[in-house]
Image (cartoon, rainbow, N blue to C red; front, side, top):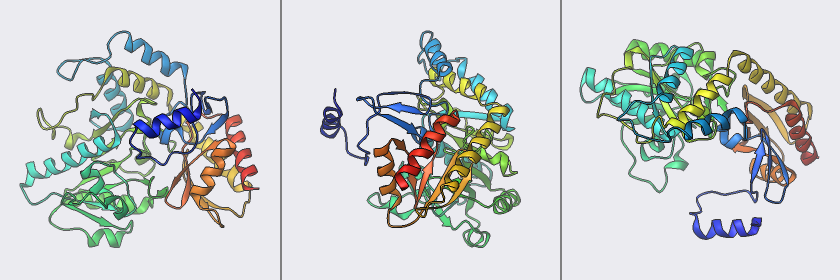
Length: 391
């Protein structure tokens, strides 16, 4: 099949909900990908933060193959081994008490919202269900998580939206303005991904955590994009000096298979009871087996390597000293690069793809989310393409 045949098939039979780059990917190894025609690309996207171990990691492939040969799916009416093993590993490494597994980031955030409202309802009754979120946030594309998203552009066409969300700027004063007796929780991304790779101020996050504790509101941390080693710790909240009541995860947890979920502390561990929440494919044995392998690989040494790689990539970009690029923000291998000059970030991303480097955009910035296993050689190749393109 040629690229043109593939493109025609896609445009004929697939809903056109994505502005795709004129690029096809057929196969790859780690952070190096190849098209049908054999063109090479360096991947600074990892499937939007999903492919933690890059492409075709043999350890990940083996875990999936072994589990697929035993049991692909059964249902949550019965016990299987991979899910509880994964839950234990996540809890032991985060200090949380228990986990719930679903299929995606949006589903994870839906579960967190439901838990927060039920916690408040069980304890205080009706009338205490509002959740404060932040402007420029992104929490998903279901109606509820879309409503939680603090970007009006995403709300258009889908009215009426759900009730009981209020939005604040990421400042202490703005958050206080949105508080009230109807609040049950505050929901935040510690680094706003889709909103532009905007890291929140550590002192602000700690003040919000203290406020939630004083008011008996739940501190809800969306780590769909920042979790699973992306920022140089298993979860970003571990670098912010806080312990959430509930945290979500998805994207990188199963390294390329659909999986998401929530972690809850002791206070919230028993809020969701039999019949109040569920997921047909949640804790799917194949996805859970893949995720167990991901966690085995992302040990403390690997987390230090992620931090070092992030510093190397940041330094390489700044060393270009290009008038087209500005500051580099972010943590670990979640980086945002300011774009200056006549080219927009989307135009620059298109030019880079033409030249063999895949990057993302977020807000006005370029967004870089390479595989956590990216090598120095692959980073250098990507930086060389960036330099060539900017020239």
